[in-house]
Length: 281
Image (cartoon, rainbow, N blue to C red; front, side, top):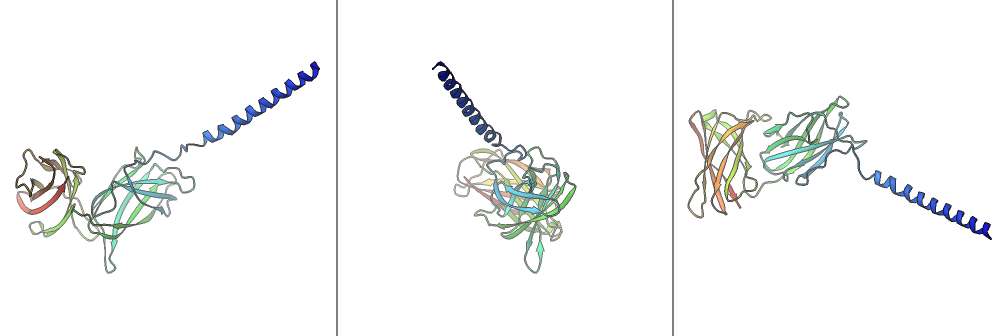
């Protein structure tokens, strides 16, 4: 009888040990597979995905994001590059974009900014485009993959819409060789009562494919609240910072519709004083 009890206890211990081992085997692999260290840094939640395309010749896939939906005006673009086989982030390479609108009888580009950082810390290759009109655009994406030393181009189709309130003005200035200027509102993106950063970009049309930044203008601003018939004090005129960006301060003393008038000069000569941006909050 004692032998039988001993055998039964030994069998129970074996069963318990096997069950315990089985549970450990089931849980360990599932926990290990929850993350992919090659996927790279997370995409910021405030960005909007515009689309994705393969970069033929460079063995990469481009996933394109922006700070807002594709519309006329200045848009910041952020592109994550991936190995299409492993889905690992490609973090090193030379990157540029070029916007193209094909109108059938002719093609034209738009003002564009391309970053120079080939190894961005956040693993997002940066650029910006001033879409000059609504309609069907393509974004040519050029990439030299430093990992495999291959390069190529991808094409992303975009439908660019017209915003309700204009954030880009283009006009001809006779006093500067009849240049066509493109003036875009960058800030304030989220206006508030009090002092706000006021930032614009200025580009000129050299030809259908080239729109260089303008760095030698002076800009004066005068905010007005049309419904109340008054302006505001303590505004700071925008001055050139870099790459055609002009930064100053605008003071909104109350909420509502404000019209910010622009006076643009070159070497003291008036170029334009009839352009403005409406800002409502």
